[in-house]
Length: 113
Length: 364
Image (cartoon, rainbow over all chains, first blue to last red; front, side):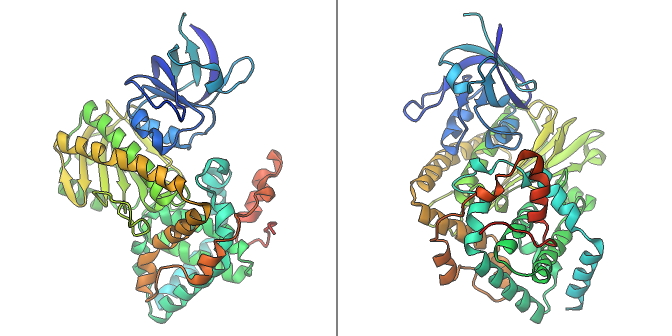
């Protein structure tokens, strides 16, 4: 495992799953995927209800994804950026990558590829 | 009238302002408002500040003439948290209306007096949102008769909370969300369930809003009652800002769901709420975003006043915006330059803006 990104952990829990970056054109989402987006909005509710965890580029302790992930009981990291270049999560993560996220420490690990 | 004057006097003596402002700064006063959709209160509310203040003052005068007390007015707010947030919004709207300190304080004191009537403890909403006495909580538990909780039910409730929260964001916008969504608690129910048990009430109210007659929602009110073991709940002045310490899925020991006053315990009926509301939530947000900015502002104004409709009715007034108010929101949103101050000066700057006792408001 390699630590590739870090953010603010806003909902506790450690989970492994496949990255799914949400875009306007692709709204497919499998149960257990880790939802990665700039910031969640209500159109993502069906995906959030299937997600094992949530990662956002921006946000704080009281942002939408933070509040709903605590209600859903799933880990969530907001303001997530790469360790080295501080690039936002949506720019460094790729669809179907296996990652582990820690919703307390805010750490995002890439599983061995 | 005597009762009303007594309340104001009480409030003044308590000098509640500094404590409320200080707590508001920690809760929402310094938050990043750039992500609020479709606009922030600081951009929007100054547009109609003058007319809103006039409407509030008319309401207060009518209430005084009719000897309506704060105790009678307080329950007419849809939620305690909504009232608390509206008091916070008053701080900037009163400054934007450019009225004097005496008028500002009279309105703020009235709102705080109503808040005092509603909150049984932690009036400022520092860590909780408590609106029921111990006796009322006991009677509530007897009425709803919670059933044994499971992780499966807790997960479904998580989905309902997610959907309802986001539906309300579409119906009440980010800024007026607390009119319709309220977390209550934590209530200690250790006398009923044993040591370490707390009750948290998650309310999603007014889903069938007159502001959106074209939107059909199958229920008006949803209330989720959760009894947790070893889960610590806290929130800030906006009770939707919930924080849990402990496992909300595994540690749900008892539950009840109330849909428009009817207690629902059957798993398939609870799941049905998810399937009915989920598409509406997405549709409403998509619809809101498709509206022109002018229409979004008009709806925002309607929402602001709709949340106070029962108070206006009590005072014998129409809650709808006046022509002047509707005209006022057609102006462009206010520029945000004045709140971009250096980080180290931010707290002191905002404290001066929010505090109704201080004549400071730099916006044009």
